[in-house]
Length: 577
Image (cartoon, rainbow, N blue to C red; front, side, top):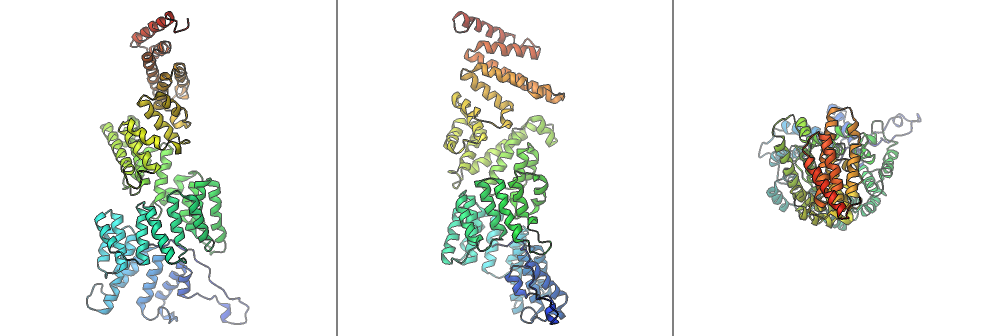
């Protein structure tokens, strides 16, 4: 069951006004069926609304004058296919109320009972799934009713009902398209492709199915194949908003955002002759993708109004990613906290959001949540939920052998601090992650945690993103790896670079205290690690700096022991005099 978005109105055909005929000077109004043929639902709605308001002026006896209800039924149809199920529902309610609703035994009422099914379809697209099920129950047993119930079961996550209605689907075109749509919505893209290809084999003239197959291949990351299929369709329908957008998305994945945005200019050119007010640039899909292609430029302003569009769930997900990339973990969490994930991508994003919240600084977490107590418990709960989200994706039969699936399983084990298990999954995707800083950070940390210090150092040195390299956890693991690989002087240089960082020169007292504490912690790690491996000279310098900065005698014993170690190494000839 599918519904097209709002179609652009096509301009009415005109007869030259040369003054030779009274009739030729008037604009010819297309027939209702002509409006529908051109998918001009705005024009059809306007015409039908006029006929409802002025029935005495309706002289088209071939279309809707047979019964006043017929005009209303066509009006509901136009509203529905024009992308306004709310108005369509109001018309169906008007028709049902006019006929007394559910009176049994009357042929007219039996025919009108199907209006309950049409109303149920409107309720489904309005997101009122329980109401849609109740409304459909009042209608006759038809294939449309089965499809509505099938889709409602999917949206409500009722696997038992979904299976039951699945068994009731026939081999008809509409039923098979519904089955393919649910497969797609559940992330079963190959199953959807199989259905679409079979339908194309039955009738090669079903050209629009190429767009559906292309969309599935895009999701499967076969972007070249997706482009080939789209070119077939665009050769006959070059102004298809959905097809042009999908082509732009493929170009974005294969090249860059600038080339992708150029693809959208085709829509502007094809719309140049359209009536005022039908600006394709105002299409929600176009607006959304332009921001993506521009790297998130003006994302908050452009995507926030799209959050209420049920046909663009990507707006919420991309806005969440935007907040995460800008360090606004709490805003990202607010967007997703009431959303139940349904696809692997949604589970991964929710898992990442929970993980960031769980690893947030405790003081910042308490301030953001307005809580002063139990913040630690709350953060542990976030980490637990993150682990569960990653595990669901990684253990899924459809995702376990994909790169995102294996990365998810690795993240699950990292949160559980089972580093050996995490490394099994990280190593399996290493060939595909050479340019991924997130991968290098996780691989380096996990390798170091199991004592593979050489691999740990190589992976950490491959990280380039400042959001990692400027953070204390990264510096701590890097310092440990340097010391364990016989590069203690470089670990000391890392401490000096941290001491000369901008945060230690700021006038903000809170930032200064935080930077000072980070430096003290890093010095402590370097001092302890160097002492353990016998790098006593660097250990002595670190303990001496700790003693000076903390203005405490607590590090005197460590400094004295390191000094003795230096002396012993000099005597043994292992340390230069």
